[in-house]
Image (tube, rainbow, N blue to C red; front, side, top):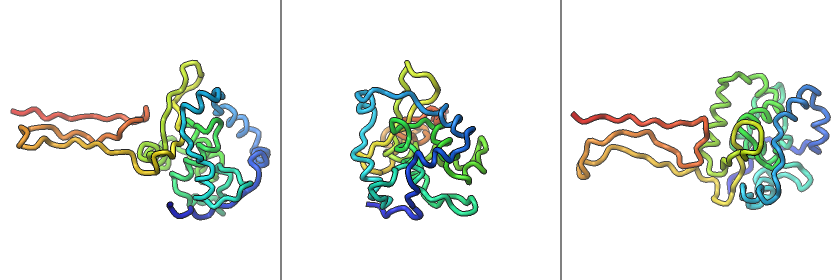
Length: 209
């Protein structure tokens, strides 16, 4: 098991902190809350493998502490949280309604919780690239389609610890060996499904002369 992440602190009941959230932010947050799914659909979409206890053990959280971003201490002076991006994403998703969030909702949860992310909330902020990279790389993060009957944009990300926390399998396609005919193409490495909508792959073929 990986060592516990640093700087974790129980900050109290989540509703208490919602009460401290400015009214404008509360209204903005409500716009991002996804529509509730029936229990049967929720069970089919995710495999949580007792994720709550797993995260509690990783973070050494007491039984009465919420498993969400409010369990992370706000750094002094609005500095960047020392918690890793994968752990921040896990806490954000697990603390979300139905334990699933879209990419934009993950961004919002981070900016709503931490001053550093609010202060660096540019459209092309580097930390947003890091979030997307970790979602595509870590096996725990699984993408599910938004139901066609549900309004809104973007598919959901959920947690699935059943396969461990390894990186998603890389499938590389290189030049064909001379033994097999040679003259093949160099193709970009691709990450096995699920492939996020914002990620595309391209292939460049070299024609033999």
